[in-house]
Image (tube, rainbow, N blue to C red; front, side, top):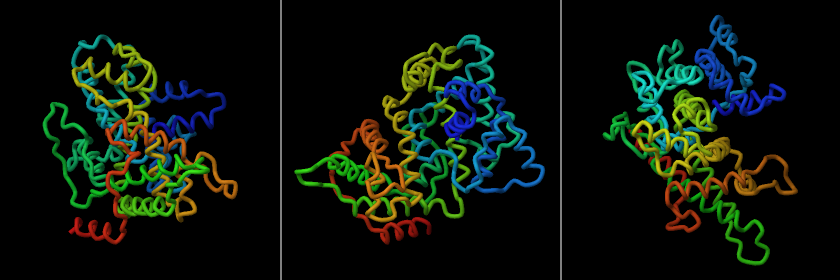
Length: 375
């Protein structure tokens, strides 16, 4: 949601640079950001009427509200999952605690204090008059547990770490979860790599298989959409994308809080590592790969869920860099897919260019497993 806001600001405000847009967002009143988040939700699932709609229009970012087209104007939950594995949320929780409880990290500048106010409200619900978007309540008081529950249901995955004090995490684990997602997704990445390497193959054996790419994409669309029936988990996905988008934007440059923490560096992963060292909580050792692939993963999963690969003849959307001469219906994701394969392998330690064991693609089997898990 945060990155999409930056893009809309750059597109609608002539001459606005990415740095200027980021500064405006990071220094904004948290209430203005909350109003905009509600506008983003309302553009996807219109629920606000009357006085509430008028209130949303008073926000500082009203000009940049997305069109009400029913399309999520935020990143896929996969974006949030890989970024949260860097442990950035827990690290910044410690940063907030240290700044709010003493002067151990030094005296923050006025700009950093504004960032602290916004972060405490956006990420942890302090003085938040519109808390529903956070997906927390007396029933679900901890936002990290809410996100863990969503990650489990969507991907059958937990985060790579426990609580902030290294205890095992406790959260509601749903029975209905996509336990086969990782195997299916990595099989797709393997097939896409075969297709990428064979794009310019004019003489050797062509190992690409558009039929199989299509079948796997269809299965992934099926299992992911099964968790989205009746807009299930959409609020949780928006909340997660906002939290992790805020953190990604904070670490995207030497912002005021990064500078105050003496963590200036050339990339987000190194900034997070230095901040983690300041507060005594180590970032994930492969954070560089996690930051590098988050946006590409979001784009690929959105494309798959949208059903753009609706037949084997459209499998090229996922691996070419330019559309075939016979079609200009879609912009292919070849560059994004190549980067994602590289960074996924770096983050997981798996060689996706070698198939260990083919994954059986069978929609009826997946449907049966889902139904059995739901009982």
